[in-house]
Length: 194
Image (cartoon, rainbow, N blue to C red; front, side, top):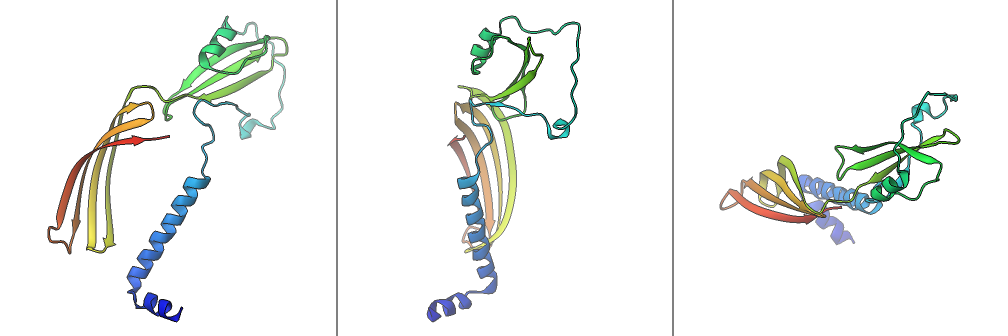
């Protein structure tokens, strides 16, 4: 044990900090992968609750002249893949929420007898084919076995086929203690994403 400690103390201080930082990053990353669960899984239907800001606010019965609803609620519910609804309920509004990974569909129902309304949200499934048009540009700097390192990367997510994304990528890096200090590569990635 003493020999192990003396070996660890012989490592330069900056390298110990680097290894400790990498180990800590790895632990946090794997903990996040294991314990992070998305709130809504693809295809899952969730009944939403009132916003916290209005949760305890008083309500009153309002008598509008008319409530415009969709005629065939059962047909729309089947088309959207939602669970069956009460025969007294009608759909007031159905919207697609943009700027989410595969999109969300929110549907608001009103009970024609009681007047109570509720909203459900469904996370849509990945499409069979889609153009993604996502661009990522990044730079990085660090210290490695080859000395100080600088890197740059450009990645363009072009096409998605169900859960698989096809992305060309250009990468270049510089390391000061290499025979050829500058390296580059071009790749095409095929990745499965949840």
